Amino acid sequence: ARSMALRADALDFLGDSVTYAISLYVIGASLGWRARAALFKGLSLGAMAIWVFATTVYHIFVTGQPEPVTMGLVGALALAANVASAVLLFKFRDGDANVRSVWLCSRNDAIGNVAVVAAAGLVHLSATPWPDLIVAAGMAMLFGKSAFAIVRHARADMARADMARAEQNRAGHTEVTAGN
Image (cartoon, rainbow, N blue to C red; front, side, top):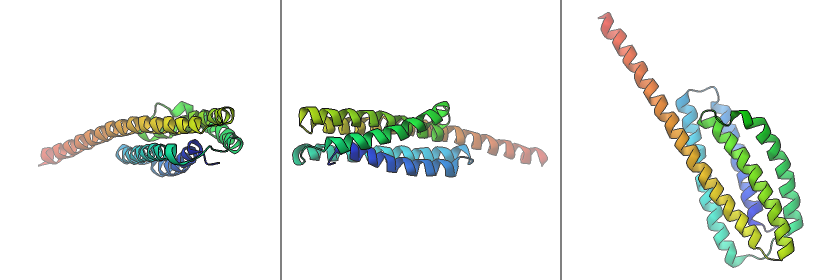
């Protein structure tokens, strides 16, 4: 459909697949490993934000108008899938950094899908690519904001895990010292 907003949305779907796989892999792991996984996800989401923003700027000068019907249909199907995911994950939105990152990704997807569908309608009405490009840039900013939140939360979880590990080491050292 030659849509940057739809490309950003598709890239987000790919990123979410990796995010969900990592989250499931570390779900029973220690807080430190879950925090590292969330940190990786946050950094990769930040990289996506930069890529989407840079390619959107490029497309402002190079590309033509996207095809709004395909753009709207794909966006609507994606919206249905993401709303179902967001509803299932809503109760986990305040969990640890790993679980919170999954919630944020699903929420962002649903927001992005609404914007893609709206942009498709506006591309059709205006006969210009600007609504598509504006939505793609907005999605890049949303990715960046979420990446920052995920990284911040992951770093806090990593600090808590480090403090717990240090406390365990002190407790183990005290037992050894007391036994001598």
